[in-house]
Image 1 (tube, helix red, strand yellow):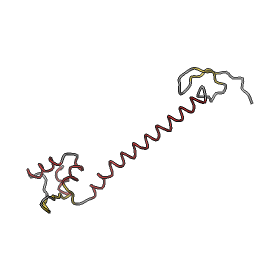
Image 2 (cartoon, helix red, strand yellow; image 1 turned 180 degrees about the vertical axis):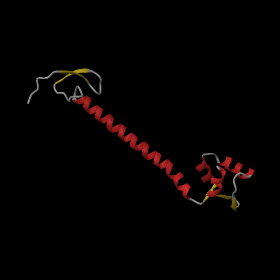
Image 3 (cartoon, rainbow, N blue to C red; image 1 turned 180 degrees about the horizontal axis):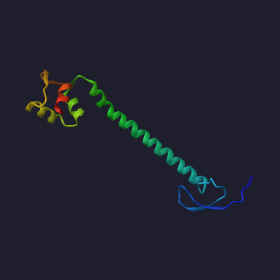
Image 4 (cartoon, rainbow, N blue to C red; image 1 turned 120 degrees about the vertical axis):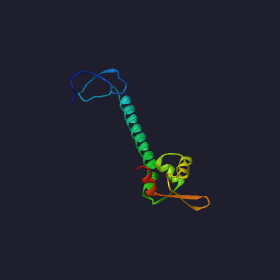
Length: 117
């Protein structure tokens, strides 16, 4: 089945004007069609990779929210500040902590919640 229609179109990929023989033609050539397809596939892979990275970054924080006792490093990750700031909060008395060992300080999760109330 041949078509006698002649339509002026603009290619979806290269933005050049071309003569289309059907109403559904979007590209001026197979080359532009293939290139646009590759761009779509590439952007989909990049988006999927970015989603995986965000999931991996957020996973430790979600795990920290479920723990009852946290170390100073974990507290700093949870509230988004440095370890030094957590130690300052402990030293001035705004955050209660317990020294288990000589170099091991833990903070109860409820104390962190009290800090922000």
